[in-house]
Image (tube, rainbow, N blue to C red; front, side, top):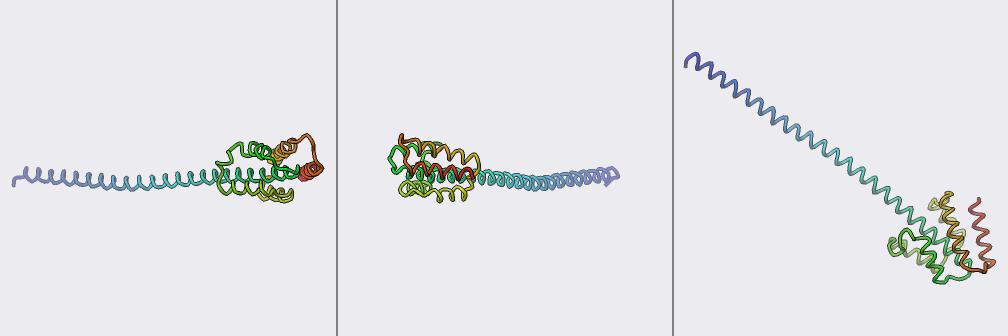
Length: 178
């Protein structure tokens, strides 16, 4: 082979080596880039999942808090109606409107609906209602104000206020004031 042939051959071999190194490096870099991209995507996905789980947990707490309020309000409303000495259907309908106006009763979870039915059939006494309010941590000023509105609505259904109803109102007002 001539001197020029060796130079051209070495040049071609060098170009092939250079091209191979470039392509290998590019592919290797691409593979590493893909792997790195996959790791980033997995981390972003995990972060999105965690955020979604947090949002769902917050919503569940909100729903649970709503259900707790509805149950406590029904307990208080049925207790107030009981103090009146009767539970006519229109009083229960008014209680339905006042308490679960946010969500119709039939849209509530089955367990909540069942507890409401039990309270309508066997209303709790005021100490039980107050324990429930405390258990559900609904004894803040805003919740107590809402409960007092319900008591006022239930008590104002009759023109004639019975002694039992007056006693109930006095007891409720003492509990709220404490």
